[in-house]
Length: 304
Image 1 (cartoon, rainbow, N blue to C red):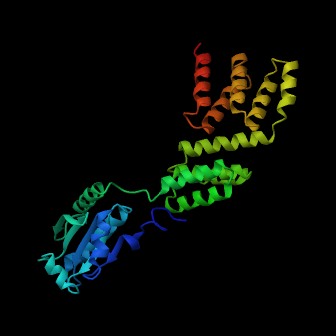
Image 2 (image 1 turned 45 degrees about the horizontal axis):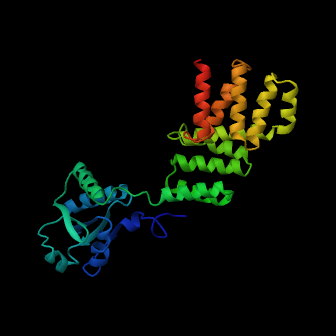
Image 3 (image 1 turned 90 degrees about the vertical axis):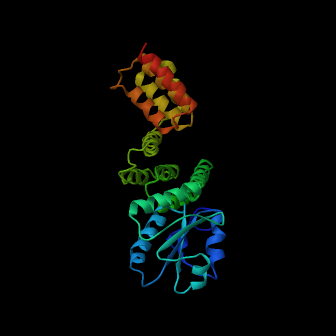
């Protein structure tokens, strides 16, 4: 699966192409109305061209679609070279909105090439994300609606393009949780690239794995409520009730029960209530109202 305004994103073969006088309008002028297009005028016998060309191609590829490049062999397109008054090579022109906007002659250092590409990318609006943001949003919606398989396919496609996309990686872990494959979720989390292994998205997914494993062992909420009514100060029953509440989807109820337990005995079982609260908070979005209210109440107890 690929993303963007077309069926596939701009990859190197689309970003860099050989052009001619016949295709100049289609290859340069028309595309330049949406993205800056660099035109590299070169010839096989030109020594500096052999250095500049590959350096330009590398910089264009690194820009990930913010600019494009068309290579024109002046020996094969002398009419076009004459129209554009190309007097020496290599000569590089940049077109945007159908007009030449920048350029230079001769081989230049890599720093100048980067600055040239950066200017053009900024002119065109910066590096696009190829539709990944929209794809992430769609995958999250699929997961929320219970279409875990479709969400997994989309998250996987995003990771093919950006292996270190923390949001997609965390999303993939959560799809395994959604289908009940906690072992695979654990394995995928353990294999997270080092750069994103401690990101908030993956830490949240790890917290969800832990909560899912607890949910598998949770007892019936009604039975635990009845047991607690008979022994209101039973710490273990309060903790078990919170686990069962969370497993049933009553996250706010679970948080409140754990807060009650913390208020009753903050040191019980090595601070288990507080630790469980942080696990629940980590599994939710930071601005979730349950998290905000729970953290406020917990802080008031800690600093009372």
